[in-house]
Length: 268
Ligand code: MLT
Image (cartoon, rainbow, N blue to C red):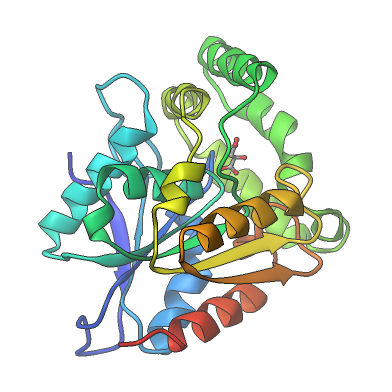
């Protein structure tokens, strides 16, 4: 499989360490469109893939596992002749980033973990994921996924005052295939604890979290910082105020500036 992706780079520049940004569940690379454009203007080569099954990428035939996302991303990097990249992801994209640390650590020059967490799911959360997987396949549509997720994906400020963001996220979720949503839920339900993978990483790391995130609270960001610090990684943590779980969409300017500042401080 070749993952569908969109890339941006300043004219004439595709050298330097590329930045790969992986989207959240259940949407596609449109989540990172504002960051891709803004970071390319700041001189970075940015690649935003659609994870397997989402957007323009085919659904995997393999059993659901985040390892498949990592392996397909490594294959995409091969295809683009990119040896190492800064890999980042928001929420499920963060889980996929941590799967890259497990499966292909030699391809990871730095990590960005946005609105995500290292721990595996508790049994009740696993059951809820498996139930959503069944439900979305039975309904053969995404409306119930939107109803179930939208109020928690977005922060209180966005729900009250950014109707264009609410409408865009609704569109992104409705555009996905039920089979991809079910596959991803089963893959996330099976994911292991990534704390040891963070502790084994010694490169640069940026941890971003929204102050109004009710799906993954700030304490999870603090645990990732602790695991990374214990392993000797250089960690920067940034709280994005007034946003919930989808920080990149809720306040693109704030996330763009946090990313640009951190990337700008890395050795070239
Ligand atoms: C996401 O935003 O990617 C999901 O909320 C992640 C999850 O369900 O754990």
